[in-house]
Length: 287
Image (cartoon, rainbow, N blue to C red):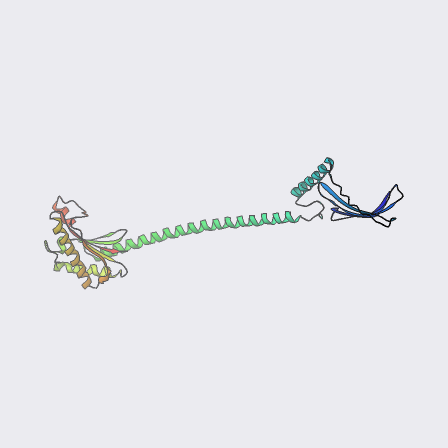
């Protein structure tokens, strides 16, 4: 016969017991022990001692037994049921109604934060598209204004120069082009006195663009040798640059003064009229 007290701690994980055992030999035994109940295994320890004899004895008994299949199945069903309820309701079994499990609440907060972040990203995308559209429209308007401004400049330059000087608008800038026959004496780099008035107007126009570089390029026809052509066109370009410098165009503004001979013809060299057009000076006012 056994008589005693048993108490469990930590959600029935640890058990404590104390009591007496009356054996068939009319002998009382004092017993005390503890046990640990694991998931699939229980371990128990017991101390027993005689209270009648002078010499007490102690024995340690360990009991190992696995849980039965029925117990294992029941435990798994309970765990599965707990997991299912948590996933469906976001609440742990046994929680107070109206409250959420910490994990579920944390997941919900993260989802809300993620949605807010996505919403902000979409707003930024829309704003970026609006800015790009506005930028494109502004650039188009600027190009339009620039075009009309350059067209107006082109017309103003043409009005200030005689018809003997052609004015062209290119991607590099404005080109002032005139024939060598009207500007120089035949086969010479000496500028005709009558042409000084034209170059004076050219100098005034160039000075209206103080931040622009200036190129002076001389060209000839193919009726003479290349060596002579190069030397003559170079001398003509230098003569024009020198005159413009005297008229107030800063020497440092000339980025190039060169003669190209018969290169880059703008007309045929098979006719006198074509060769006359090819003999020319081009002054580029760089944008």
